[in-house]
Length: 396
Image (cartoon, rainbow, N blue to C red; front, side, top):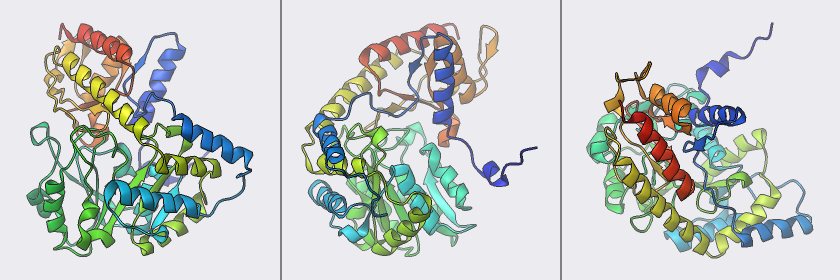
């Protein structure tokens, strides 16, 4: 009898991927399933980036790469951070990984010991909590709500800190809520961290360009905190490069060296072709990225307009990313046909099996009152999806 490692029971499979699998199964059975579950732009990678990848193949960039990434790519990351974010880093403070998810894993495995507390505002991306569990740390959630626009304040942060706190992990713009912290809000959080010199901060900025309210702000702008802030970013969202699998961190060189050691045993350096394409992305025109953001904003506005026609959805207007995260607890305990909706998981499964629209239950993100819907899909599909949801819920 096969006996798998007990380690596998310490963390969960991402609910986003579970829902994608269920949607594919229904689609294979002949159903017209509209995917509002995965966080993937439905755009293609811009031409100048693809051309750089093709050129790299013809130029025979087909050999092993340095664990930390090619020097010219790390220099390109430094240029991007300086030009876009007014942050100064050297190539020795950059490491490139096979996606921002691996970047996060490298940092967490490098910093977190068994029993360390990791503070994470809710809601959060599903993988945050599971990576902490893999590192044998303890997840400490800091709750937020629709009424607080899914953002914590300085008082909440300070109240959550104990002598066991090792790390604070958050994203802005946020997946799943779309919340964006302003420069002033980040400065207020930074003032708390200045009192606690042993706490590190991971700032996940993967949705940086998908921002509808102004220039992106980073907590790394606080110079006194900069050696404790790990900026995580990548190319999947802003450049429609999900399949290229390339992320990076910018951090103190000692943290980068630790991540290099971890990554050297898992994957070594990431794909050579993706790295050369990434240089073209980071140093080239951002017009395609901003064009995508304008289209996402149209889709956000349409999604909110259609959602307002359905009773029981309590939703903030997201300032970034490409998700809405409504509180749907109005439906808990209600019966529709022969089914009773007990929680957000039941709600997601109900609309998947009856409206053939996929979403992700909020409990996966640390908020069991809500459900995440992506609007990284076409206008046509968004209209069709929300019409279906309206039709199956109108008798609830």
